[in-house]
Image 1 (spheres, one colour):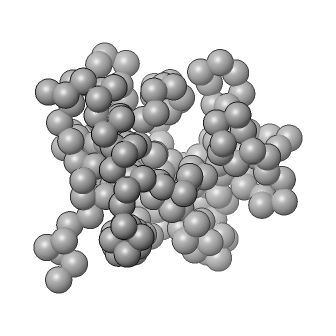
Image 2 (spheres, rainbow, N blue to C red):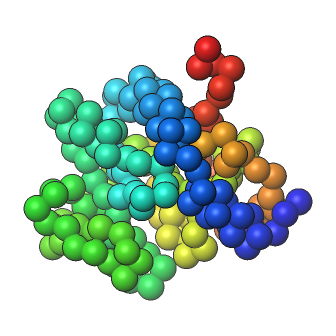
Length: 179
């Protein structure tokens, strides 16, 4: 089993070095899987993360959900180690100290479903994030649906710790299914 810090570092390098054509191909497949998911269709309030350039790009999903009159919410760090979700409004965003766009001055909302980001995922539903523990802390008391989308190389084996929270559903890119 790999140590989380090593896996985290390796996955960041792999994400940053991914070819745009391959990234687009896998994102297209994963976007479709996410939007066709029945729990996504049944949810009214859906939490997305504002992706960094090398991460899975959530822009397409966000636009489709807004077209379907879903309420899209995004995370904001509110205190040391804590985050909440706020309604997405592209006119009310500011760049956080982490370099991620966050909502400004809105009321927090509890989503029906959360698209959970990560650097690596195992077959059991555990994930490695960036090390801040924001999602693990939030998910500890969250009872809604959780889904993650992962590029093929993000499927990894790693040591799970007692504070790690599972994601209920992970879609991995599957080249065999693409054919």
